[in-house]
Image 1 (cartoon, rainbow, N blue to C red):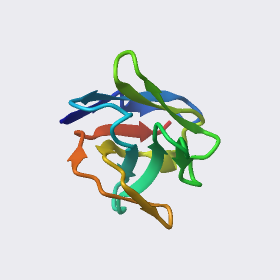
Image 2 (cartoon, rainbow, N blue to C red):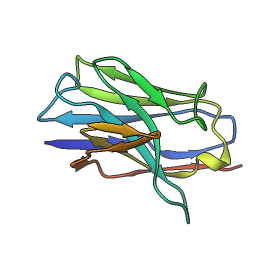
Image 3 (tube, rainbow, N blue to C red):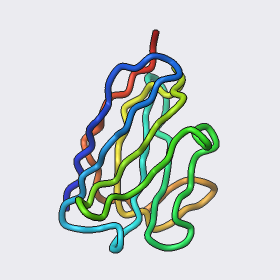
Image 4 (cartoon, helix red, strand yellow):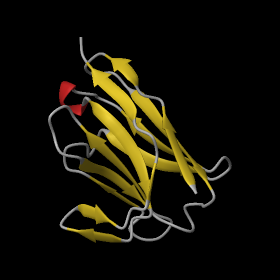
Length: 123
């Protein structure tokens, strides 16, 4: 099982980026997947959750309405479309699976992590 994240970069405030997470050895039908991030000097936080069952997606309050997680089943790749980026979104972003339990907006159960991809929002 592998997850490979990419797509980070430097973007101006208000800009957009799309992160990718290529899945190997499993599909979204097998496990729910999460996006996480860790900003400089901050603890890791949950960003988004996606599953093939209900609820399909869950987002952190800080990214609701700006970020969208979706799956391209044809190439078994999870995407995180990030619009309206803010300096506070600067972080290393990770994808991880499986997400087996959600408690108080915290994700649990992750066994596999992709290598992080750096997102920097700055003018």
